[in-house]
Image 1 (cartoon, helix red, strand yellow):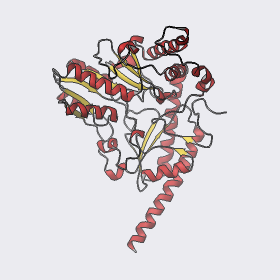
Image 2 (cartoon, helix red, strand yellow):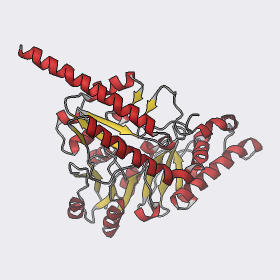
Image 3 (cartoon, helix red, strand yellow):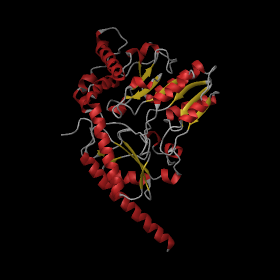
Image 4 (tube, helix red, strand yellow):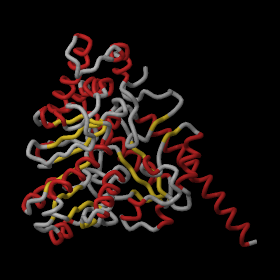
Length: 397
């Protein structure tokens, strides 16, 4: 029987959950019901009411998940839109008096590129360094923040290394200087146990497809007191905070999946066990492997490996042919021949970064899949290293 949260072909083992997650099979059971939600929720006749009902219920469920008011939830197309909206809102609202924006060196491109765009408009951009172990330099933040700082934006956990960042401390530092705090929390739901309210953030962004719901749906938490200028002007949707007819199918799918989150704590513990088991087996079976940021706080499901004498893309393609879906880094940078900017920011050399592999487990991953993956990875690495050794010998001769 197929696992509810591993809705993929049985001959394929999916280990790239930080890029996206399979759709929960509970959505399949309600697929036809979702297709009936074609009415415009902004209309006031009977055809609009089913969609409006799901819109309201999903908003309430996500607010309960975070422990906030439903009025602080804004639906959009995804976290990239949310990140753009937040950074540009803060700049437009506070840029004249507070021209500085502080982000980490390893933010998602939607934060990094937005900040660079604001820099072209006159913002002072300060990049918070990270150590080789993935730790954020809080001393840099304390030294560089000032009464000119408008916003600190740091992701709750890095999508490539899994490193978890001290958002609560950053919020306290920001607020002590009158700055606002934003965290890209895309990797949080279902991967880490957390009291969201303890973070103290003014803004947080999420994407539904990162936790078993449909793509094209994003969620923003914005405190009632936090500045907000719509990125998309239009109708009065989302209390005039985001124009455009709502993606009712995607929003409804979010609510359906949230009904399964009562098992989140158990799933997180199991993913941690499987990740630790996987890393232990890999380190025992394959020589010259380093687990990036292994000693730092990490997401329960994420393992970033540097495997000497084995090219990352070649490993990925070899594993893909054998039925395993993994990654060399962030999916948003796929097709880019350059090494991961995240790994380079951590201080890895280009050669080290080009030998990276990211494995990210999900709620449907089981121990038999981990056993098969480690066995196959061992074979792939041994073959690639043997070929490289032959090439070197041939070059010498």
